[in-house]
Amino acid sequence: MWWLDNVLFFVAFLLGLGLFSYRVWRIVQVIRLGKPSEVSFSFGRMVGKVVRYALIQEKMFQRPIPALLHYLVFAGFFIVNLEMVEVFVDALTDEHRFFARRLGEVYPYLVSFLELFAVFVIIACVIFILRRTVVGVRRFRAPEIDRHSWLDALFILVAVPILMVFILLMNGADWVLIERGVLDVAFREGRFWLSSLWAPAVLGSLSEGTLHVLSRVGWWGHNLLMFGLLAYLPHSKHLHMVFSFVNVALTPEVPRGAMRPLPEVQKVLQTYLGVEGSGGEEELPERFGAKDVPDLPWKSILDAFTCTECGRCTSECPANLTGKKLSPRKIVMNVRDRAEEILRYWAKNGRDGLPEGSLFSYISREELYACTTCQACVEACPVNINPLTIILEMRRYLALDAGQAPREWTLMFSNLENNGAPWQFPPEARVQWLRSPQQK
Image (tube, rainbow, N blue to C red; front, side, top):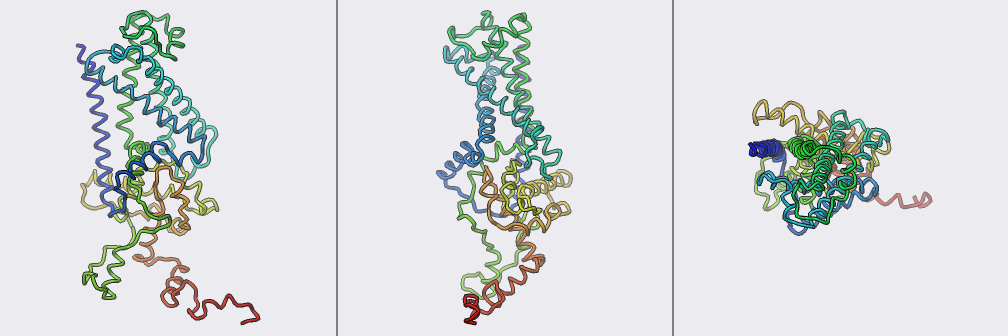
């Protein structure tokens, strides 16, 4: 029945991959609800942005110590899991340590390299856990970080080191078996740097059968947890491990501070003014700005599912720092919450229609009006999320569609219409403030 072990392995893998793919497919459906978005499709520039922001994580290193720890977890996770290549080959060939018999003296150096990164990952995750639970970093204790978000982060920070421990357990048991000559390998001089230090002292007294069991516990424990995390990932903020690459690649290349034009308003004005080439009578859009998720550019919805909830945007927001209610992180998380509500509604009622409520069920006008549009949040985000676009689109809806602009805005609009400037002075009196009191 040797084949049963391998069949169970691939069943677990396909189940994890299937659950992951189904959930991502549903998320893509809600992202496609959004309006057209200006994005960059230049291949060279896309690759450059992925390297800078997703691989090198350039923006993260504005805070060097947490950035280094995060990079150890990020890079270490992917590097250590290169061992999954051998795992799949083992499952296909019904061998254990397939490459140990074929790479010769190179193999122990590769395993040793992976072991070092596994230890780095464990150390970094322990520090991150202490920062969240003992140190209590302020941006991790904001009101928008509810119990679910906090536990989600903690779960991953615990699960990833356990993955590493399973690998080290498998390597340690195998090393003792290699030393005893039970496990056949091609190398004779090399060793697993870390396992050769701890395994003989800790596991050396165990029987051959027990060592085989521990090796399989490490192998199966790592693989089952890995496939479980694969299925869980799209339900977690850690989906950014996948979506961040797409998000940074599609970041629009526009001047800093530029606002998205409103072609629907332009068409209406051209028709009203009889501008040549306007296309004649234009049908009015359903609404101006964004009231709900489908009114946002699809890139903003992708932003919401890419958010890492790190809070760097909020920690840099001058409105938030001066005590205002605005939190850019909360804005982005609320868009995701509303999108999730839509997905739950579709699961029960099909894709016809939307659930009651809107983005304004999550985001208040006070939050929107507190924004100064300085773009500090946009600059701070490590994965190029743009909370400002969401804020501007919702404010446009309030001003242009709902007629709920603040009194100060209404006065400014009136002055622009009548005087050609935000101030309540006629054009000919606009420079009078330059004169001294004696000149007046």
